[in-house]
Image (cartoon, rainbow, N blue to C red; front, side):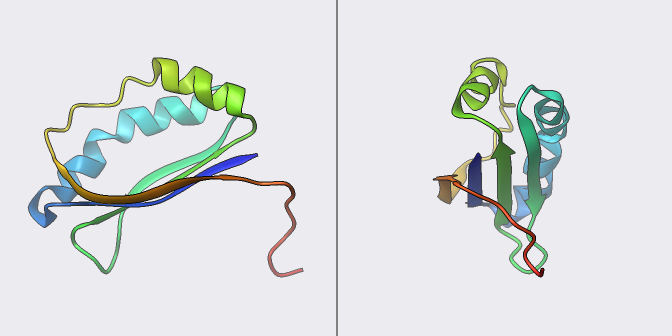
Length: 96
């Protein structure tokens, strides 16, 4: 399993438009083969921060999605980013 997680920073005045521009991408990603979850969302505390989360079953399915994803041109510059890919070797309920 792969997890892509972190955040990007954009101009606070453009953050909500940046998130909204990705709605179609999120819907298509969630329907893609091997996608377990995707979220691109406004942070509730930092007006410049956009949280990014993706969970994929395999690198191959992630690569296939990236080849056809066609990310939107939101015309919003990313000021900084802190998004990383993580390879997961196992999973379990967090509280049990």
